[in-house]
Image (cartoon, rainbow, N blue to C red; front, side, top):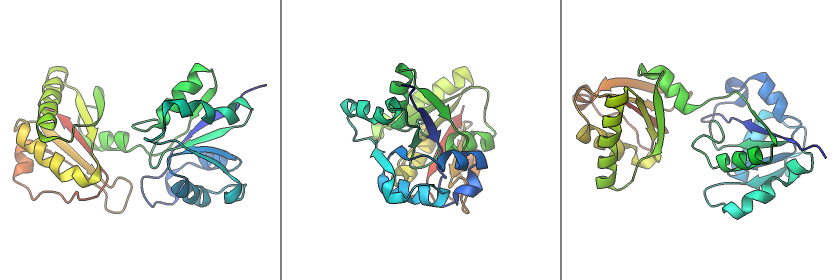
Length: 236
């Protein structure tokens, strides 16, 4: 039997209506799907209701895949695809499989030669890079830096050295409630001339993308980052 297709479906970065941030062809792809792999069923249903679906919400087949999912559980998530059904993979926000546990499912699908189709939608990482004015030819996403102060400081100095050596933009994120601690650590550990971009609430009404040298940031009123989704970019 022919296998189904795994569609990688982007989700708006905040409360933006899907029609305002997703192309019409993505919404059309979502509409007939009955099987989804999602991070949280409750928020996924809210998104699918807003995006539009041909199936009653209670009848959609939603399987959860998040940081608590064990590797041994991944295999069963491919069952609908093996049976010939198309499946949509959703992140909580942004593009699935990028800084997202869905990458593990995509890897397994690729191993079985199941067709994987990425769909166009918002990516906070690329949007931040586009607006930063930093090097968009050579960049690296580092995910989350260590939470402990000493380890985080060491990581920042190493990333700054790598950025200087390769002229490479370093991109990283943090849990929103630790944004300020990371921002302060960058100012404390990085060189005055290093450029730092702070991109907050991308695509949302309070969106802000600012780039200054570390030295200039120290002279400014610190940005309000408390519990606001933020991407940090650095170029030495």
